Image (cartoon, rainbow, N blue to C red):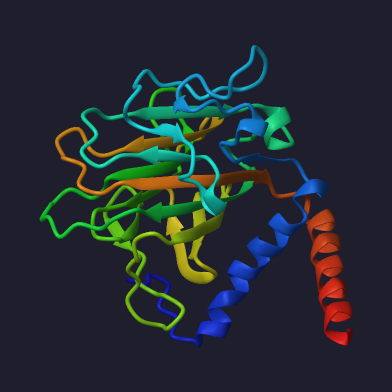
Length: 274
């Protein structure tokens, strides 16, 4: 269900998503972290908690060894990915607290603007009936105890949802302007921008803008934390899924962002002329 009430063409809805994609194209120019779960980035096969390996740097915390597991051959392009198997016996809750080096600047819970993206694949889909909303979740934000801000969920049936603290909203638009439902074995790119001053975020799926949504909670989080979880406490996980290429970045000051967008437009013009 779209919540912004707009009925414009698919091309118009792509504009907001294209801005996010353009920004991530300039990641080397801005502070950002790209979590690709690869051995070359220090990720060892096994439990996500404690990775990446080595003595230095930010690590994922989480005690579960069977919830979400770094696994070879599961990621985008056949690389390593963060994998949650079907029927996982326990809930894995994993946190990655971004410091200034990871994020590119000191996070401000009342003013920062954060771009994020991730790739998600269902390895299978299930027809099982469940009233519960998810087998996997991605969150941004933290109030010291619980995840706040952005809450993205996915379920057994190939649906992507957000939860704004009041209700679950299904992402229901695909490139054909019909109901979105994932196909197994295909990676889907989810991306958006979280505005911590307005307490809202935008979201797109495979380049199709879904709308603007409210934060789960409207407080001021003291830190920026990425969460990944599998299943619900009372829900059997029927479908396996994979997460890969998680990116989080600070949106630069408006003047610099304008330069980046102008540079991208100029690059596009050069490409067209060729």
